[in-house]
Length: 316
Image 1 (spheres, rainbow, N blue to C red):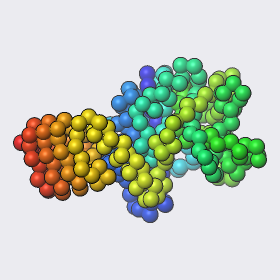
Image 2 (image 1 turned 30 degrees about the vertical axis):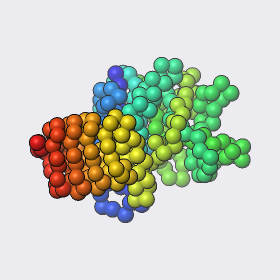
Image 3 (image 1 turned 45 degrees about the vertical axis):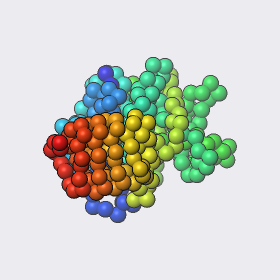
Image 4 (image 1 turned 180 degrees about the horizontal axis):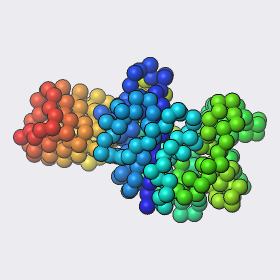
């Protein structure tokens, strides 16, 4: 059984928006929906999104895609896991993913699930040239994870470590819900931190492993509108490159906008400033002209798509 918990309760104050942070869009889709759909793509059977701020908006956006649990008040990442009670009695493996980690791929999520073949929990990490003020991942000599240390608590030796915690994890589900009961909130913020689970797992003789992401940009979170734009640009380049390699023509890929779940046939020309989003399917030999905006559209072979807004329809 593959499960997942998506942490989607925060407001995201640095977005300076009334909209919950996880509903801000990348590639034409709310960040939380991108994550849920990628989790489904890598085989997640049950997904619980832990919601809080304006939770009714998040629930409406993700309706039919996952289950929900409300975190109120919001007392930290460990507390969010405690709130995911629909999964409390499940067996199998559970990923915990931040709702703003929208560019993480299904293949990386699959690697996290697979890492539990030889461990009881795993931390997704990345190595940076400048680890700045991120929490450091401290490993043993044989490579298992000993602890995650917040920067403010690091010794000088630990500050020299460049491997950081992305905030994305995999757990044996039954052990996860046993261990969260032991989390303490004896800190200045009076919050329960998921990072403390590493040492709780180790105290029980359970192994904590690490999975390293190759590209730091894939696992970047989004905290403000600048980071949202950077994530959008990174994902756009990846999506467009995949289509270019498959025989789709784009005179200017940097100004061509394609969602991650759009399908496009060969010998199709997509001119700049076209937007193809949602579950749009484009046939072979299609021409999409500048200014066309398509969402959930089926375009037949050989069609010529003019500028304008097209949604939930078929174009011939």
